[in-house]
Image 1 (cartoon, helix red, strand yellow):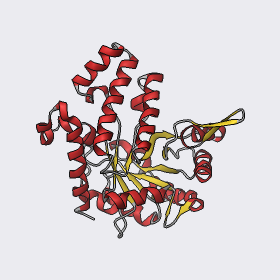
Image 2: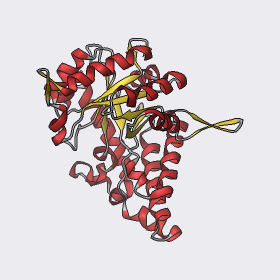
Image 3: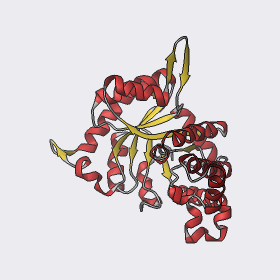
Length: 305
């Protein structure tokens, strides 16, 4: 799976992941109005507005990018109707040839982790049949419970040729409360990084492992250290743009060959039309603003590689 992502990154020359994390407030009024006219001011109406919004953005960006990252919480807030749109979004992205990174940050132990892995990455057996639940290509995983929590995901990835991105150093301001704590003189994120390398050794796919790491763009000095600790681990990098990370901050996440990382931008792309820079597009042409934001982001990142 990581080889497929790398191939698409090389083809598009855009190490980019568009975060499909839609809040209803991001959706232009004309779309919301139409959905509410059809389904009422209901969970179904809200979910339909999210779907119409996603579809437009995907249609206007899929040829420029290798991957997308829908954050499941943005869909779960609308209950079952929202989860149906999450699945619909995943399937539509696959139809467009995109790699889908499910951002669910799952992490539990034993049979619970195995069930999560089956639901998001694998196939569940029902009588004599088997079915794919959400069918994402990668899944974000929380390693807080240790190997017991991660191993079932790795096993599912090896069985289904899928991938993981394990949280190592996240981009949020309070991440250091735990992740930067010193253990035997070294920060916790370094210990986690070494475990990610260990977990990934049985999942190598060429030069890189299918077990990747989430490393935030907002801490460039730490990403420099982590790149050295994990030379064969692909990074999923949040924090660019709206969270304050710059292209210069991203440089250390990449290897010398210009590979090694895929950079996420969520509202910086999907809500680009609300930025002064893209205001000329207007709400009616929000997806065209998103397309231009992708083009600008790719140029910005490539300028430092």
